[in-house]
Structures are given as C-alpha cells and as structure tokens.
Length: 90
Image (cartoon, rainbow, N blue to C red; front, side, top):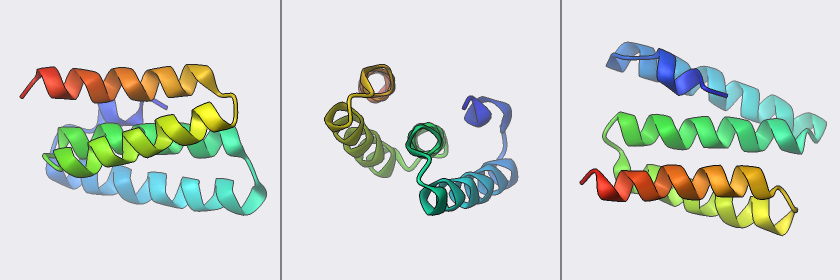
C-alpha cells in the first residue's frame, strides 16, 4: 500500500491513518495476513512522515519481525528498508 505517499498535509495524514487503522482491523477480523502487513507498512511510513519517528520505527521493526516469522520476506525487507532509510535521514 503506497497510501502514505498520497497524503501530504497533517489532515490528510490523520485521514490516511484512520483509514489504514480501519483496514487493519478489518484484515485482522478476517485473518488476511498479507493485508495486515501491507497496512502496517503504510502506517509505519505515515508515522515517519508525520514526525512520529520513534513510533514509526517501532512499528516497522515489529512488522519486520512478524513478517519474517510468518515467511513474508518481501514485506520484512520493505519494513527494514523504510526503517533504515529513516535513520539515515536524521
């Protein structure tokens, strides 16, 4: 989900966060693991872009761990990459 790249200002970020949280809850209720991971990746990106860097990094680290544990190596790699790029932009 590249939703985070389409939301520039704070109001849009808040709206995107709300939509992604709703999508995440729906994916969890139906057991759609891929959709859960996609939503979490987008949420982590939004946290980083909105200035909640520590929260974003924490979410991305947890996502990387969970994705690896379930064999979703591409998502784990994306989470690690986004988290790593946030550290180099300090």
